[in-house]
Amino acid sequence: MTPPALVAKAPRPAPAMGGPDALRHLRRDPVLKAVIRQVGPCTLRPVRREPYEALVRAIAHQQVHGRAAEAILGRFIALFPGHDFPPATQVLSTPAGAMRGCGLSGSKVAAIRDIAEKSVGGLVPTRAKAARMTDAQLIEHLVQVRGVGRWTVEMLLIFTLGRKDVLPVDDFGVREGWRVATGAEAQPKPKELAAIGEAWAPWRSVAAWYLWRAADAAKAARAKPQ
Image (tube, rainbow, N blue to C red; front, side, top):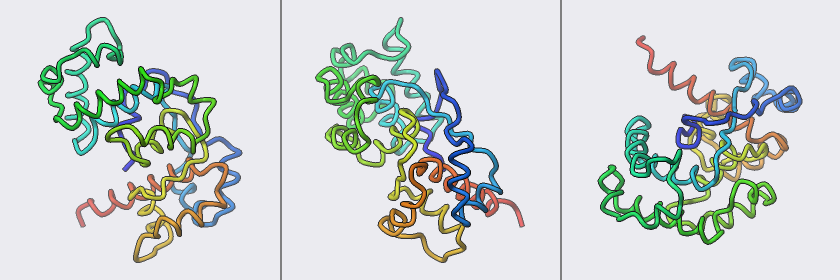
């Protein structure tokens, strides 16, 4: 259940986020301690991309199977030979029809053009500028972009910028992981999980990764033939 849009095809993977300090802290929670024992070391490695690129990739992946989204992205990138990823200025000068021809829907074309426009205008920061901004500031800025909500920004914070203390409480997989790990009948409400997760700071991103893994393991177990 780990969101694929911000983790695929990493050009420069960072070191794993969940080191000894993180695990030592999270093991204080008996529920997470059991999950960590089951899953093993944390292999979460953020991808060092520009926020502009990460957001475009996230839009391409919305409501589309991962392989199909990557194929669409491949055709989109091919429109701009000589570039590892399409520059925002060139995206803005590209006809919408050409982008639609790559398999992008009209709404996704509009969103990608808005990301490009707001990158050129400075609202979508460079990676260097983002490093000087807090999580809250980045969320406040980026939710102004068409097609980008809080969840998408939280994924960027974790998987692109490597922020260590983000708990996406609205994420189905995170809440499902806690339900599975505790044996509860129902998922916790976002506010409830946020309150529980306060004890996991400053390593809530790592906690979220382990909860995703717990949810994945439970899903795989259900899929096995009985």
